[in-house]
Image (cartoon, rainbow, N blue to C red; front, side):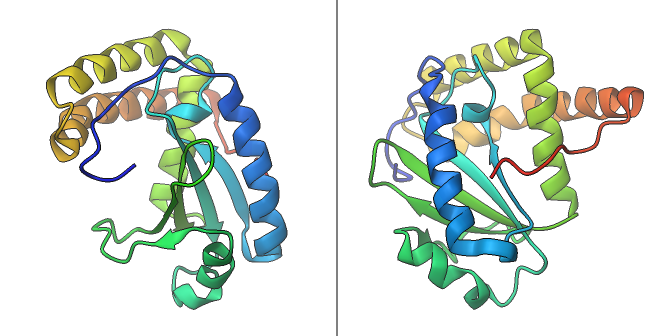
Length: 183
């Protein structure tokens, strides 16, 4: 999926989890202990949550730099490094061959962004009503901003931040900690 492809949200597909498992197993073999965690994240990681059909994977490493520590292994599997990604808290790779696109977000283990991504995923997994509300927002915004990915992402931000505030309250009430790595 390229930046100029239309935004299309699909009904949740239980197959997304199986696709991640296969990809995660391959990534674990390629990266070994270099990857402290390999997790299925993003909307396709939440059962029942409608999403763009892209498998998002977060790989946690001890250090983001040098990228050459892990990039060759990912590139050998067909993932392209996107150094122009503006989010400096991660290194971004993507692949578009296969049944659907795959985005890999490499983050530093223990970083705020790594933890927030896992927290939001776990919160939505345990709060299906909030996941349904998020899906409704995504459907509406996909209609309005179908051909403008940047505006779609910007328009989702207030909803994502509101969910993160709820997730933070939930984490404080429950003592949430990330579970084991998915792969």
